[in-house]
Amino acid sequence: MIDLYYWPTPNGWKASIALEEMALPYRVVSVNIGRGEQFEPEFLAISPNNRMPAIVDHEPMGGGEPLAIFESGAILIYLAEKSGCFLPTDPRGRSDVLQWLMWQMGGLGPMLGQHGHFKLYAPEKVPYGIERYRNEANRLYGVLDKRLEGREHICGDYSIADMMCWPWIITYKSQGIDLDAFPNVRRWYDALKQRPALRRGYDVGRDIKKATFEGGPDAESRKHLFGAGPKE
Ligand SMILES: N[C@@H](CCC(=O)N[C@@H](CS)C(=O)NCC(=O)O)C(=O)O
Image (cartoon, rainbow, N blue to C red; front, top):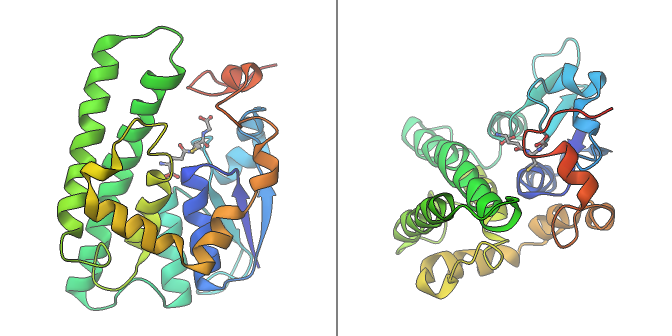
């Protein structure tokens, strides 16, 4: 059994989608990041960066003690290796998928995160920050669009590279992205949305999210997020 430490956000959805796609047994442990639960010592022992998702595998590959993993990219690589699905084993195919997974971890995720922050959440409107991250978001959508030209998936067959990127496109409207300008991303995004396992993964925690995040973080959430640190 795998414990999934989770809250329904783009990074959380990557892990719930992967677990559903790979049909691995798991249970959800909710980490309400809008209420500061990411700073609880028990959670920090699993995820020292106070971010979710994280997992604990009670029957880890190779046996032994339960294995804790944080960082969504590391989680998806581990789950793919455990299930034997969605990560090619030939060196070229594997390298291709890992390159796009790293691109998501180092580029698409953080930059769209900053873009959303400056556009929607920053208490002051900082034109330089807004423009910088809007340009970067559009550049990254352009990179993904070019990659998907003539391709059904990011790398050959459906893989963890797709599961990493797809959840970050969901919020394209609030990101202010004109998806019609990126027709290959739109086609890929819409096609993947039809996958039943992906839908199940995306639906995990739909009900709990309403508590704090519907329509953006509430006032209490702002005290715990955006690097604010734990609160008394
Ligand atoms: N690089 C990390 C990023 C995870 C991340 O930023 N998670 C956010 C939610 S999407 C979080 O837990 N935030 C809590 C906080 O900011 O304190 C990953 O890919 O797992």
